[in-house]
Structures are given as structure tokens and as C-alpha cells.
Length: 335
Length: 290
Image (cartoon, rainbow over all chains, first blue to last red; front, side):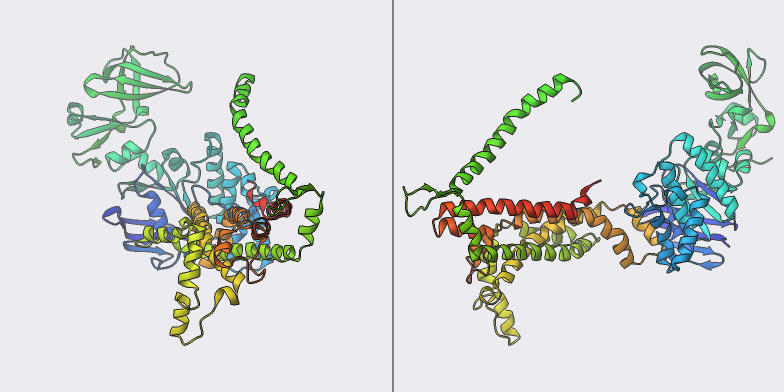
């Protein structure tokens, strides 16, 4: 079991409020990603759950028990650190076994569990190596092995993939997700990378300035962002925001259209007109940065190749049903 | 240093410095070797004559040699043990966040800046003096007889003084090492359920292996040649109880005025230092490999 509930959790360092009251329900077995820009408090929130920081206010319940005053080791959680934090003088075996050894588990059982964990992570040939003799991806797997071997109630991941190169990151992303589904253990994963968040999560928590902006499934966040911040943060390239006259006509202070929901036409009729400022040709897609006069700079995504170059006139037609409307305070207006 | 030109330039520019260092080393060494083969007494000038290895035989068969060799090893070993065994907990304490820590740190480091002669004098006359010393006064407070340190436990007294001088060095090196210990590693150990003691044994102590090696190597180099503290406090006595190799050579040269024998002793000391260095590097030097 690994059901985690946050009730009004607050954290301040002196006069600085890092977490301004977080309420959250994390279901057993789910993969929850905390995402947000740097300094939004996502890592602090994770460390509060882990017990590496003390809460200033509120309660953290793990399986219904308030663990605010329970030391980290007895919360039944295990953590994968950004730097991996492997013990450099211990072999891979020693690293993975350390937690069990500290818990006083019998030698035979430690060996059995370590070998099972190593097999799961394809680490068996490296068990007797030192961390410095491993590649980045292997170290990452050792750190994960150290987490799974203790059979925790939940895994906590603190930006674990940020030190890997792009290709390896995609591969480890898949491995972590697959492993989590296979074990069925609750996981909380912190990242600033919204692609990681969208691809890995069952549910995403978007944090900004110490507050939870929205909590929902990736598609919910994509399709129904509850405010301007979430709308701008989720999706790549970023959603276009238009204020002023066009927004007022829709009965909103701001309207948002995602680049993929703008229909690009050469010299077309209707919609917004503009000149292509920059065109990024990826082959599969073309990203167009269009100077659309009163609407400002708009980003449009065209699937395939349109053969446009800077200076060309285009028209952009938004899909009416996919226009997001926001009021003065930035909150989404639901029809 | 990729091209031949830069290599040539580097060699040309290095040559004067290397040559100077070489001359600095080779002239005294050559002269020492030369004097070691002479009968050369300052009280009997003009009587110098070649005696081959006679000076070495005389120095090595002198009963004072074995005694001073033993004293040297006991002194080095004891000071190393005391500075490391006290330096580790002291460094751990200084690594904590406490109010006024910068002042405490400064005070802990202070003994290292005091001249050996001065600190030896302070210890001898203000602390350990059997009549007017602080220790005697404290003993008196408890109704105990004062200890005449330099008579009753001369070598131990010298070890105490030298340890006091070198403890800050060990503490400082170990403290900087502690500060470079990855915070996330400590947290990982905490998550793994390690108690403070287990975290110290399994995480901190292995991390300190390398700085401890550095402390051992550097302190050994300096402790083999301790002289001022002995000269000022006991003068090598009573008897030979605090005479180490360095002091023995001094007494050969400037008490008995026997330059030949002192030179032979100097060369023996060089060989001994190299033997010690060889074993040290064999035993602890592998910690320095990355």
C-alpha cells in the first residue's frame, strides 16, 4: 500500500514561504509527477514527503498515518537522488544492500533480494564494480536498484534523469515507467521537463510559486488547463496567448490557442494574417513563428512540410473548439 | 604541450629552476657524503683524514643510535595516532552549524601558527613546570602531588606538546574533507535508515580515508625531523630518553663537534626516512589513487 495524502502542507525557510499550503491525494500505485519551473517548490515538496525537511504546517499522511514526526527511514519510502548519491567506496552490491543491512535483514535474504533487484535492472554483471566504473545510465539504475530493493510504499524521484544525455533519457524514461507499472508501487517524480511529465505520469501536479496550480491527468491538463500558467507550461511549443480585441470578441480577457490548433494557409482567407519571421523545418513538422500584427508573434505547427520561408504571407485559422478562454485573473472560463 | 615548439619552450623555461633546485640539493648532499668519510672534529682542526666507512660503523654501533631510532618511531607513531584520533571527532564537531563557530575555528587552528620553540617554552614553563606550572596548580587543587613531567614522563611530555601543535593541521585537513562530502549521500544514508553511528562508519569514515592518508604522509615527513621542541624542553634527556635521530645528529655535530660522525648520521637518517616513506606509500598510498 502506498497512499499519500497532503493536508495543507506548508514550508517556510525563515521569512520565505516555499510551500504555501498544498493539498493532494495520491492514490496507491499511481505515478504522479510534480512539474514546474525552477524554484517552484517541487523538490522541497518531495523532500517534505521524504522527511528530509520538516514541515512548517499541515499534515502528511501515508496510508492514513500522519508521518510528520516520523524520521525518513521509518516512513517506508525510498528516494532516487538527482546526483544518484551512490556510496563511492561501496560496490554496486554494497550500495543496493546498504538499506537492508541497516534494517538488520539476514545475509541470505539480502543476497537474494539484491540479486533479484539487479536482475530486474540488468545490473547482474556489474554487481562487484564500484560506481565510478559505471556509465551514467548504469549508475542511474543502481540508484533505482537501491530504491526498489527495500520494497517501499512509494518511490520518490528527484529529477533523476537530468544528468543523462537526450537519447539515454528517453530510454530510461521508458524503463522507469515500465518498472513502476510492473511493481505497482506508488511513485512521485519531480521534473522540470514537461515532456517527461506528460509521458510518464498518471497524474501531473503543476506547481508554481509554492502553490499547486492544477492536479490532473496529462490530457486533462492539455485539454482543460485551469489557468494561464498551466496553459503556458504544458505543451510544446508554448500556447499562443492573445489579448485585446480578438479576445474580447470571445468574451474573455485572454484567449489561448495551441500552435497545433492553428491552421496554416498560404494567402488564405479569414483568420489572422501575418508574415513568417522564422520557419523551423524538422521534416515531420514545421514550426512557424509568424508576426501577426495586432495579435503579436504567433507560433504555428504544421504537420509535414509547407515550403514556407521567412517573409512569406500566411493566414492562421484557429480551430474554434480548441480556443481556451481566460478571465482577468487568468482563470479558465468554462463554457 | 602539443607541438615540438611548445615542448622545447617549456623545457627551456623550466631549465633554470630545475638546475637551481638540483644544485641546491646536490651540493649539500655531496659535501655530507664527503664529510662522512673523513675524520673531522671541530676541536681538532687540521687533522682531517680519510677514514672510509669508519664513521658509519661508529654511528650505527653507538647504543644511542638504537635508542634514538626507537624514540623517533614512538614519537612519530604516537603523535600520528593522537592527532588523527582526536582530529576526526574535532573536525566532526567543527562541521556543525553553531553560533560563534568562526571564532572557535580560529582558536582551534591557532596552535599551528605558534613557533615550535615558543610553544615548547610555554608548555615547559607555564603549563608543565612542577612548581609554577598550571598543571601543578591544578594537581595541588585536588590535593595531589605535582607531576614533574620532563623527569617522570619525558618522552610522553614531548609527544603531548608536538601533538598539540599538529592537531590543528589534522583537524583542518579533515574538516575540509568533511565539507566536501556530498550532502545527498548523507541524505541517502538517512533514507536507507542508517543511524548517526552507522552513517559515520559506512559513509563518513571511508570518505575520510584519503585525507587521513594525506595527514599521515605530511605529518610523518615533519615529525621525523622534530628538533626544536626537544632542544627547548629536555635537551634529549634525561639520559637518552627523548633523543631522536635528529637530536642525536645535532649532539654529534655541535656537542661532540664530530662533523664526520654527524654527517654519517645524517645520511643514515636520509636512508631511514626513505625506508619509512617506502612502507608508508605501500601501506596507505593506494588511498591516493583516484
